[in-house]
Amino acid sequence: MTDDVHDVSSAEPGGADELADARAIEQSMRAEAAATGATVDADAAADVGVAVDIAVDRQLEAILMIADEPQSLVALGTAVGAPVPVVRQAVERLVADFDGVAGTVRRGFELREVGGGWRFYVRADLDDVVEQFVEAERPSRLSQAALETLAVVAYKQPITRSQIASIRAVNVDGVVRTLVARGLIEESFTDSETGAINYVTSDLLLQQLGINSLEELPLISPLLEDGVDGFEQNEGIPDGRV
Image (cartoon, rainbow, N blue to C red; front, side):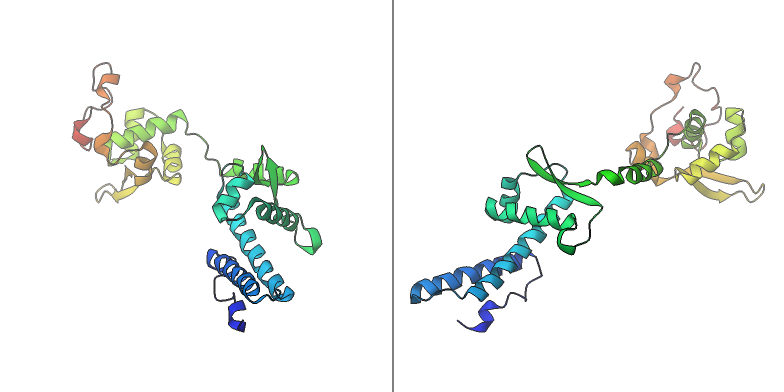
């Protein structure tokens, strides 16, 4: 058998091609040995076995990284095309690797068996820091004042702060700054005569509402006693949606 048959370095390390190449080489070695009556070279077979192990380990790691639910050994074996015993050994190697066994770095996550399947979990001693991060990233709900101001902008845009304040009969400077910071409204233009900034809703608001355009905003007249209170002028309201 020529030396180039044993070369499995041309494929992406740990990728599907490398796994296929390694298995093909292993099968070729065994077939040649059976045909000639010779024995399989132990060192060469060991090298191929290591390549197969590495490829399986990396493929399982990639699958488990995106898995939302615990994955059984059978499911993992089906995904990578490997028998269950091979997958079991690969999972054991990954667990040891992530736990810092044999000099490896102990990760902030662990591969844990839960409910008959395997999945990545945050280590228990790091729960507090993860919880703080999640709480800090979680957006707080808009106040009633912010929701009312956002509705005025949505139906009367473009509109200035003073106009919003006139409709709501309260100071809205702080609320407008909050909505701008959240990316729900944005500055459109500045009035050349008064210098007042006019605000409009952003594309983010459309995404949050699940609509494609302002034309899809619901009519508000059924919600008002006389259909016009607070919205005497229709300019800027999509389709005069009062």
